[in-house]
Image 1 (cartoon, helix red, strand yellow):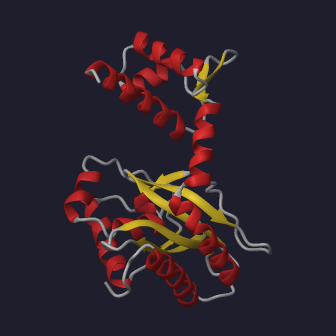
Image 2 (cartoon, helix red, strand yellow; image 1 turned 180 degrees about the vertical axis):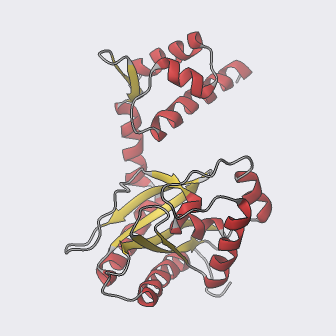
Length: 256
Protein backbone atom coordinates (compact mmCIF):
# COMPACT_ATOMS: atom_id res chain seq x y z
CA UNK A 1 0.00 0.00 0.00
CA UNK A 2 1.34 3.42 -0.94
CA UNK A 3 2.25 5.94 1.74
CA UNK A 4 -0.45 8.31 0.46
CA UNK A 5 -3.14 5.66 0.98
CA UNK A 6 -1.85 4.95 4.48
CA UNK A 7 -1.94 8.66 5.30
CA UNK A 8 -5.50 8.92 3.96
CA UNK A 9 -6.55 5.97 6.10
CA UNK A 10 -4.95 7.56 9.16
CA UNK A 11 -6.84 10.78 8.48
CA UNK A 12 -10.14 8.95 8.13
CA UNK A 13 -9.55 7.23 11.46
CA UNK A 14 -8.62 10.57 13.04
CA UNK A 15 -11.88 12.14 11.84
CA UNK A 16 -13.93 9.24 13.21
CA UNK A 17 -12.08 9.36 16.52
CA UNK A 18 -12.58 13.12 16.83
CA UNK A 19 -16.31 13.00 16.08
CA UNK A 20 -16.71 10.05 18.44
CA UNK A 21 -15.16 11.99 21.30
CA UNK A 22 -17.25 15.13 20.88
CA UNK A 23 -20.72 15.51 22.38
CA UNK A 24 -21.91 17.89 19.64
CA UNK A 25 -21.33 17.86 15.86
CA UNK A 26 -18.44 19.89 14.43
CA UNK A 27 -18.04 22.14 11.42
CA UNK A 28 -15.51 21.28 8.72
CA UNK A 29 -13.37 24.20 9.88
CA UNK A 30 -13.39 22.89 13.46
CA UNK A 31 -12.41 19.42 12.26
CA UNK A 32 -9.61 20.81 10.11
CA UNK A 33 -8.28 22.90 13.00
CA UNK A 34 -8.47 20.07 15.54
CA UNK A 35 -6.60 17.66 13.26
CA UNK A 36 -4.27 20.23 11.69
CA UNK A 37 -5.47 19.34 8.19
CA UNK A 38 -5.80 21.55 5.11
CA UNK A 39 -9.39 22.71 4.57
CA UNK A 40 -9.53 21.21 1.08
CA UNK A 41 -8.32 17.82 2.37
CA UNK A 42 -10.86 17.90 5.20
CA UNK A 43 -13.75 18.62 2.83
CA UNK A 44 -12.64 15.82 0.50
CA UNK A 45 -12.39 13.29 3.36
CA UNK A 46 -15.76 14.28 4.77
CA UNK A 47 -17.50 14.02 1.41
CA UNK A 48 -16.08 10.54 0.77
CA UNK A 49 -17.00 9.43 4.29
CA UNK A 50 -20.51 10.86 3.85
CA UNK A 51 -20.97 8.87 0.64
CA UNK A 52 -20.19 5.73 2.67
CA UNK A 53 -22.43 6.87 5.59
CA UNK A 54 -19.55 7.00 8.08
CA UNK A 55 -20.35 10.66 8.72
CA UNK A 56 -23.54 12.68 8.35
CA UNK A 57 -23.87 16.32 7.30
CA UNK A 58 -26.46 18.66 8.83
CA UNK A 59 -26.93 21.44 6.25
CA UNK A 60 -29.09 23.65 8.45
CA UNK A 61 -26.20 24.00 10.91
CA UNK A 62 -23.32 23.17 8.54
CA UNK A 63 -21.91 20.58 10.93
CA UNK A 64 -20.80 16.95 10.77
CA UNK A 65 -21.46 13.99 13.07
CA UNK A 66 -20.91 10.25 12.99
CA UNK A 67 -23.07 8.43 10.46
CA UNK A 68 -25.06 5.22 10.46
CA UNK A 69 -22.14 3.07 9.24
CA UNK A 70 -20.09 4.08 12.29
CA UNK A 71 -23.05 3.13 14.49
CA UNK A 72 -23.33 -0.24 12.78
CA UNK A 73 -19.65 -0.99 13.39
CA UNK A 74 -20.06 -0.10 17.06
CA UNK A 75 -23.12 -2.33 17.30
CA UNK A 76 -21.20 -5.18 15.65
CA UNK A 77 -18.43 -4.85 18.22
CA UNK A 78 -20.95 -5.01 21.05
CA UNK A 79 -22.39 -8.18 19.52
CA UNK A 80 -19.06 -9.89 18.97
CA UNK A 81 -16.53 -8.21 21.29
CA UNK A 82 -15.07 -10.87 23.58
CA UNK A 83 -14.66 -8.77 26.71
CA UNK A 84 -18.09 -7.20 26.45
CA UNK A 85 -19.74 -10.54 25.71
CA UNK A 86 -18.00 -12.39 28.53
CA UNK A 87 -18.49 -9.50 30.94
CA UNK A 88 -22.28 -9.40 30.69
CA UNK A 89 -23.00 -12.09 33.25
CA UNK A 90 -20.33 -10.78 35.62
CA UNK A 91 -21.94 -7.33 35.55
CA UNK A 92 -25.35 -8.87 36.15
CA UNK A 93 -23.97 -10.78 39.13
CA UNK A 94 -22.29 -7.70 40.58
CA UNK A 95 -25.40 -5.53 40.27
CA UNK A 96 -27.58 -8.27 41.76
CA UNK A 97 -25.25 -8.69 44.75
CA UNK A 98 -24.68 -4.98 45.45
CA UNK A 99 -27.88 -3.32 44.27
CA UNK A 100 -25.76 -0.74 42.43
CA UNK A 101 -24.93 0.13 38.84
CA UNK A 102 -21.98 -1.92 37.61
CA UNK A 103 -19.80 -1.14 34.62
CA UNK A 104 -17.04 -2.61 32.46
CA UNK A 105 -14.41 -0.35 30.91
CA UNK A 106 -11.17 -0.55 28.92
CA UNK A 107 -8.26 1.84 28.53
CA UNK A 108 -7.90 3.87 25.34
CA UNK A 109 -4.94 6.23 25.43
CA UNK A 110 -5.45 8.35 28.55
CA UNK A 111 -9.21 7.73 28.63
CA UNK A 112 -11.41 4.87 29.70
CA UNK A 113 -14.13 3.66 27.35
CA UNK A 114 -17.24 2.18 28.94
CA UNK A 115 -18.13 -1.07 27.15
CA UNK A 116 -21.16 -2.14 29.14
CA UNK A 117 -23.14 -1.51 32.30
CA UNK A 118 -25.97 -3.00 34.33
CA UNK A 119 -28.45 -0.94 36.33
CA UNK A 120 -30.36 -2.11 39.40
CA UNK A 121 -34.08 -2.77 39.37
CA UNK A 122 -34.63 -0.73 42.53
CA UNK A 123 -33.39 2.65 43.69
CA UNK A 124 -29.65 2.24 43.12
CA UNK A 125 -27.71 5.01 41.41
CA UNK A 126 -27.96 5.19 37.63
CA UNK A 127 -24.83 6.45 35.90
CA UNK A 128 -24.71 9.06 33.16
CA UNK A 129 -21.84 7.07 31.63
CA UNK A 130 -23.67 5.31 28.83
CA UNK A 131 -22.01 2.57 26.82
CA UNK A 132 -19.48 4.26 24.54
CA UNK A 133 -18.76 7.11 26.95
CA UNK A 134 -15.13 8.15 27.47
CA UNK A 135 -13.77 9.72 30.66
CA UNK A 136 -10.25 10.70 31.73
CA UNK A 137 -8.73 7.51 33.12
CA UNK A 138 -6.84 9.28 35.91
CA UNK A 139 -10.12 10.44 37.47
CA UNK A 140 -11.97 7.13 37.49
CA UNK A 141 -11.72 4.03 39.64
CA UNK A 142 -11.89 1.78 36.58
CA UNK A 143 -9.15 3.81 34.91
CA UNK A 144 -6.85 3.71 37.90
CA UNK A 145 -7.41 -0.04 38.24
CA UNK A 146 -6.00 -0.54 34.75
CA UNK A 147 -3.30 2.14 34.86
CA UNK A 148 -1.88 0.65 38.07
CA UNK A 149 -0.70 -2.41 36.16
CA UNK A 150 1.05 -0.62 33.30
CA UNK A 151 4.83 -0.46 33.16
CA UNK A 152 6.11 2.84 34.53
CA UNK A 153 7.67 3.72 31.17
CA UNK A 154 4.40 3.13 29.33
CA UNK A 155 2.51 5.11 31.94
CA UNK A 156 4.90 8.04 31.60
CA UNK A 157 4.67 7.91 27.80
CA UNK A 158 0.88 7.99 27.89
CA UNK A 159 0.80 11.03 30.16
CA UNK A 160 3.67 12.97 28.60
CA UNK A 161 2.54 16.56 28.01
CA UNK A 162 -0.91 15.68 29.40
CA UNK A 163 -3.13 18.64 30.32
CA UNK A 164 -4.83 16.89 33.28
CA UNK A 165 -8.51 17.71 32.66
CA UNK A 166 -10.68 17.88 35.77
CA UNK A 167 -14.44 17.43 36.30
CA UNK A 168 -14.89 18.50 39.94
CA UNK A 169 -12.95 20.14 42.76
CA UNK A 170 -11.53 16.72 43.73
CA UNK A 171 -8.41 16.99 41.64
CA UNK A 172 -5.67 14.73 40.34
CA UNK A 173 -3.43 17.07 38.40
CA UNK A 174 0.13 15.76 38.24
CA UNK A 175 1.99 12.64 37.21
CA UNK A 176 3.49 12.37 40.71
CA UNK A 177 0.05 12.46 42.33
CA UNK A 178 -1.25 9.85 39.90
CA UNK A 179 1.65 7.44 40.43
CA UNK A 180 1.19 7.72 44.19
CA UNK A 181 -2.48 6.79 43.83
CA UNK A 182 -1.63 3.93 41.49
CA UNK A 183 0.94 2.49 43.90
CA UNK A 184 -1.84 2.18 46.49
CA UNK A 185 -4.16 0.59 43.92
CA UNK A 186 -1.51 -1.93 42.90
CA UNK A 187 -0.92 -2.90 46.53
CA UNK A 188 -4.61 -3.14 47.45
CA UNK A 189 -5.78 -4.71 44.19
CA UNK A 190 -8.67 -2.27 43.80
CA UNK A 191 -9.37 1.45 43.41
CA UNK A 192 -11.81 3.77 45.18
CA UNK A 193 -12.76 7.15 43.75
CA UNK A 194 -15.02 9.64 45.49
CA UNK A 195 -16.22 12.75 43.72
CA UNK A 196 -13.47 13.24 41.15
CA UNK A 197 -15.69 12.17 38.25
CA UNK A 198 -19.09 13.30 39.56
CA UNK A 199 -19.64 15.13 42.84
CA UNK A 200 -21.22 12.89 45.47
CA UNK A 201 -20.65 9.66 43.56
CA UNK A 202 -18.34 6.97 44.92
CA UNK A 203 -16.91 4.24 42.70
CA UNK A 204 -15.08 1.03 43.53
CA UNK A 205 -13.32 -0.95 40.80
CA UNK A 206 -10.87 -3.80 40.33
CA UNK A 207 -8.81 -4.90 37.32
CA UNK A 208 -9.69 -7.71 34.96
CA UNK A 209 -6.36 -9.43 34.26
CA UNK A 210 -5.10 -12.03 31.82
CA UNK A 211 -2.58 -14.85 32.05
CA UNK A 212 0.40 -12.53 31.59
CA UNK A 213 -0.78 -10.33 34.47
CA UNK A 214 -1.79 -7.36 32.36
CA UNK A 215 -5.03 -5.53 33.13
CA UNK A 216 -7.14 -5.57 29.96
CA UNK A 217 -10.22 -4.02 31.56
CA UNK A 218 -11.76 -3.08 34.89
CA UNK A 219 -15.09 -3.81 36.48
CA UNK A 220 -16.69 -1.63 39.14
CA UNK A 221 -19.76 -0.24 40.86
CA UNK A 222 -20.96 3.29 41.53
CA UNK A 223 -23.11 4.57 44.39
CA UNK A 224 -24.15 7.81 46.06
CA UNK A 225 -21.50 8.31 48.74
CA UNK A 226 -22.78 7.43 52.19
CA UNK A 227 -26.16 6.04 51.09
CA UNK A 228 -25.35 2.48 50.01
CA UNK A 229 -26.80 -0.43 51.97
CA UNK A 230 -23.46 -2.23 51.86
CA UNK A 231 -20.36 -0.81 53.51
CA UNK A 232 -17.39 0.23 51.40
CA UNK A 233 -15.54 -2.88 52.56
CA UNK A 234 -18.46 -5.07 51.48
CA UNK A 235 -18.67 -3.37 48.09
CA UNK A 236 -14.94 -3.82 47.63
CA UNK A 237 -15.17 -7.51 48.49
CA UNK A 238 -17.94 -8.06 45.94
CA UNK A 239 -16.13 -6.12 43.21
CA UNK A 240 -12.86 -7.97 43.77
CA UNK A 241 -14.62 -11.33 43.81
CA UNK A 242 -16.36 -10.73 40.49
CA UNK A 243 -13.26 -9.22 38.86
CA UNK A 244 -11.25 -12.16 40.16
CA UNK A 245 -13.60 -14.72 38.62
CA UNK A 246 -13.56 -12.84 35.32
CA UNK A 247 -9.74 -12.74 35.44
CA UNK A 248 -9.51 -16.46 36.16
CA UNK A 249 -11.61 -17.17 33.07
CA UNK A 250 -9.09 -15.13 31.06
CA UNK A 251 -6.19 -17.22 32.35
CA UNK A 252 -4.99 -15.17 35.30
CA UNK A 253 -3.78 -17.17 38.28
CA UNK A 254 -4.96 -15.72 41.62
CA UNK A 255 -2.12 -14.30 43.69
CA UNK A 256 0.10 -13.48 40.72
